[in-house]
Image (cartoon, rainbow, N blue to C red; front, side, top):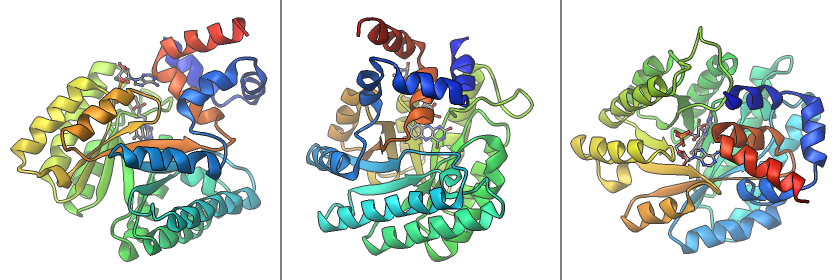
Length: 307
Ligand code: FDA
């Protein structure tokens, strides 16, 4: 019940101001956000690499309102890529981007987001790595998939995310699997209406398994984005049945969530990539993490009271 309320609050400026300035917030935010600057996040990448983990890096931010902010978002990724190159970390780290941060919702936003993200994809390719386009709310997805297709003409390794809670996703998965894409499958983290998305957790989980089967049996590279232990073992079984070797798919989890499981899967020989978010505009990302697990909200409220 609490999840939808928290997701609604994630779009409120008033709540943003309240949460951002509340005592105790930082302590809880730090669990999910790996620092505010590139200098903060690079040691996290190095530490992950030393433990046999890969990362996908997200400079947090979304729903920007000016072209200047979109250009600044692009430049933040370009700086990150430069620093990864200097440290020789290009092959351990890929990038995750939200097109709304690159200007997708502005006037002429589709072209603007494409131009901004293309610069990031080019820079990533130059250091031997790739970019994955995150999935945001359902109204943005046609544009996201079109940008993904366009980028793949020159950079076939560009990935995208699909969400099992959406009715459309089985069809998207079939198309992407046939074209050999890198595809991250997640359950979905936004507040979506019943006209486009399953509302019931059991339905979302069942859809996840159906879609994963399509990806595993297809031509692409499945990236299994979940912390759900049941789905992780089903994924292992589906990969085995599809005759996939360990380097023909990967698991992905979020920084700060089930960290022991990251290490366990890596120790079993799986490729495990940790989605590592950093930056100052963490509000939307943080609120989605609270919405996923109400216990996080209790922890947050307790840390505010005890400050
Ligand atoms: P589920 O919610 O059933 O959780 C399974 C278990 O994991 C829980 O019982 C709990 O133990 C643990 N857990 C899950 N979330 C937790 C949290 N916040 N705090 C503490 N424990 C938690 N979504 C989206 O819409 N677009 C996107 O681009 C992405 N990108 C993305 C990348 C990666 C690598 C991951 C792992 C996830 C995303 N997501 C996403 C988020 C995704 O849609 C989903 O909301 C979360 O992964 C939670 O769903 P689970 O599959 O983990 O299952």
